Image 1 (cartoon, rainbow, N blue to C red):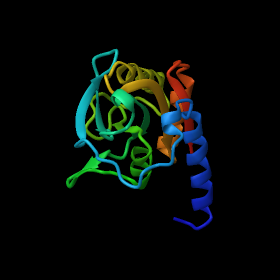
Image 2 (cartoon, rainbow, N blue to C red):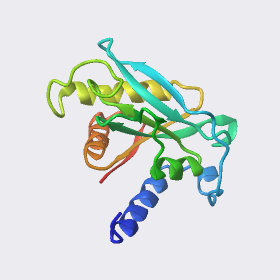
Image 3 (cartoon, rainbow, N blue to C red):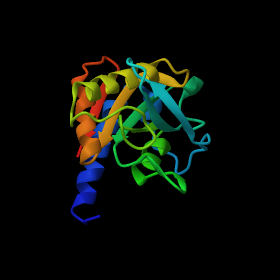
Image 4 (cartoon, rainbow, N blue to C red):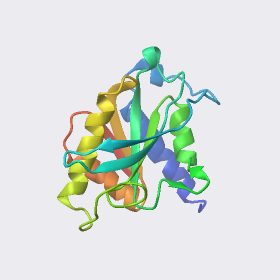
Length: 174
């Protein structure tokens, strides 16, 4: 990573975290390590029956009663490889601060089903909304969702904002 990008990324990360800090539990200083539940790989069904492949990381001690905000990232470049699910520094940073982190293979890519008809199709916006609907119904979710990413994933974070879903509290496209 270029040295100039680190301060920019840290600033964006802090702004993103601030958007979720309405609950005092998330305002405390992060602990260096958190116990993590094993990665969960699953499929989330979309409104048209297409299933999107998802990897989910949840800190065991994320929040009181296990309810926490979720950061989602969508990629068309495979969320996992032959060695298993990828876990980035961004994911670790959010997990260390008590966030669930979900990475999704976009429609028609990776292990997801369906076809990519065109870039930024109405289906892709609707898919973001369907994923948020799935997240807010989970027992570990506090009903707050954000999106993050760079390049393609950053564009899908903007698509998340375009859904207008009330659970979407922040996006950080880079």
